Each structure stands twice: as C-alpha cells, then as structure tokens.
Length: 199
Ligand SMILES: C[S@@+](CC[C@H](N)C(=O)[O-])C[C@H]1O[C@@H](n2cnc3c(N)ncnc32)[C@H](O)[C@@H]1O
Image (cartoon, rainbow, N blue to C red; front, side, top):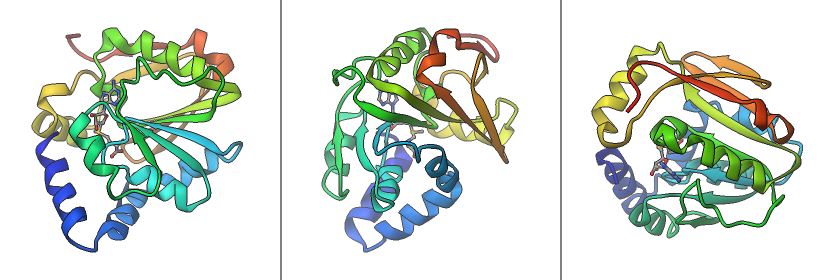
C-alpha cells in the first residue's frame, strides 16, 4: 500500500468524507465520460480499483460493479466501506467465467503493471468480456511531466512505463488524460509501444 493510499484510507475510515472523495475522484478522473462509454451494459469490472471510488460512483449510477485489487491489505480495508465487492486478484489471473462482464475498466492502472505481463492481462480481459463488451483504459499522456513526476515520487516501486497504443480503438483526450475504448472483437490487433527504457 503506498503512502497516499494510507492517508486517504485513514481519512475515509475515520471521518464522514467518503462522499467528498468519491465526488473529487469522479471529477478529476472524468468518470462521467467513462459512464457514457459503458452505457451499453450493466456488469462492470474495475481492475486495480485502489480505494474503490470509481466503483462507488458507478454503483450509485446503477451499474453492477465488481472490483479487483492486487494489494491484499488495501482490498481488505476498502471492502469495509464500499457498497459493492472487491476481490483480491491479479489482473492476469481473474478466474471469472468466460464472457461474464460488459466492460472492464483500468483507471490509471496499466502503467503499474510490468510490461511483460501486458499480453497476459489483455488475454484475460478479452476472455472475461462478453461479445460486444469493451475495455476502457484510462492512462496519462506519455508527455505529461506532471504525471511522470507524480508517479516517480509516489509509485516508485511499481511504476513501469507510459505507452502509446496502436490498433482499433476510440480515443478521447481530456487534458493530460487519454481514455481508450477497445471492443472485445478488436483485442487481437492491439499493440503497445513503450516510452523510454523498458524494465
Ligand atoms: C494508481 S492506482 C489507481 C487506483 C484506482 N484505479 C484509481 O483510479 O484511483 C493503481 C492500482 O492498481 C493496482 N494494481 C497494479 N497491478 C495490478 C494487477 N496486476 N492486478 C490488479 N490490480 C493491480 C495497484 O495495487 C493500485 O491499487
């Protein structure tokens, strides 16, 4: 669990500020745009859900959300205050049934997954999405100095690489944010190119 998560968790757990955090998160991460993109279906998987705030927002909007979080301690504590369920799993081994979700969201997560694991994760997401389902991947712009410095300070242990994506997808740009929409049918042609030295 990183330093920032610890501070936010303590505030959410000990003060009546959960709604404030959900609203701040929703506006800073452009969740209304994400909500519009997933309006084709109800069942949403929020992969790398962290503090669970995206799922809390989408649950209120009527979606049926499941969260997935790699960090065991974080998943356990967040499950105590959210109104849906988070499972402690790795995005590369989700163990859900084939064709079981309408959409899978990665909100600022992919650049925290080692790049050698990216093909495995994409394969797993393709498997669990229903036909016509979609992955929504929200990532910082590779040229964003602010995000790069932020990640290097607060996520030094598990910050890997920003990347560009090639293939068939829709892209919305909002400030430093890139919102990719990839349909299940278009996963096989998806390619990433990484920025800087690959570790
Ligand atoms: C920068 S945080 C983003 C959290 C949240 N999505 C948000 O928008 O605030 C990245 C999260 O992804 C999680 N994560 C990293 N690799 C993962 C993996 N392979 N499977 C599941 N979660 C993962 C981390 O533990 C962390 O909580």
